[in-house]
Length: 302
Image (cartoon, rainbow, N blue to C red; front, side):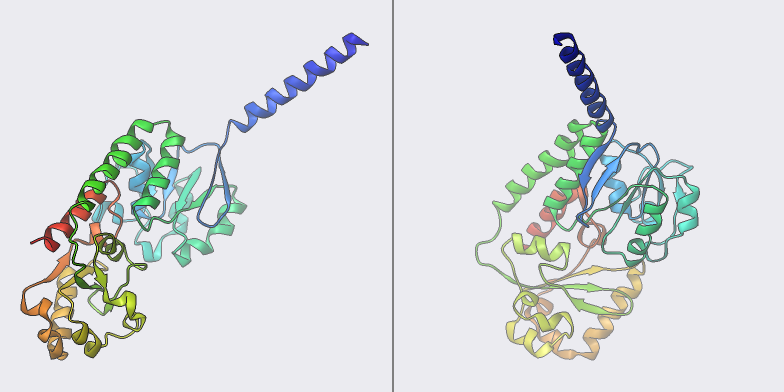
């Protein structure tokens, strides 16, 4: 009887070890769609947004496919055989599948990418939908990626050290809470952005600024110049959407000409209208987040 019990215990322990070893073959985490993502292999990772490709590469990984912003905007060090999936607004699914990815990084804010989710599931390709809105989100994603690659030294280099820089920058922020108007522009439109809907707005908020669109949400839909003139922001920060920088600046200039009350604003009269680098203030700064904070601080502290 004693021998039988010992035999059963041995079988149980071997079974437990086997299950543990099996589970250790997978890396498991939760994405921003609240789904549990189980990844066994990530030798052929494809990113459907350039900023996620960059974070994956900062974590020591490589990508086999990436949208064209990885080349044009972020200038990533991509290999010659990396598949260009086209513009983020219209990615090529056939090119993605042809790249034979075993792991996909996608955005939960892109409708096209969301519609592909079921296709990825049917092909048994794990696809993580990850959102990076602020620096804490960036740290979270970098932490996951460096856990996967085993390169926690890169988390220290591109995460914790940047966090320490930002902490020092925030100590130098102004105490008088200047009013700002934060805007996103293209060659076809000009919109106000609040602290919750833009990377630049969030950073300005942390730097102690009062964003007009935070207290008057109607500005997000309509640039009420009378309200803006009444509040009279000290600074106007404009960042670009799209690839046409010249067209964007021309549109803004025309808009101001057609709405002459804008020229009565203190920000305009004092030369405090700033066109900001879209890589840092509309796309994701990633490892350059401290640089982005510092750029705003230098303007505010002039």
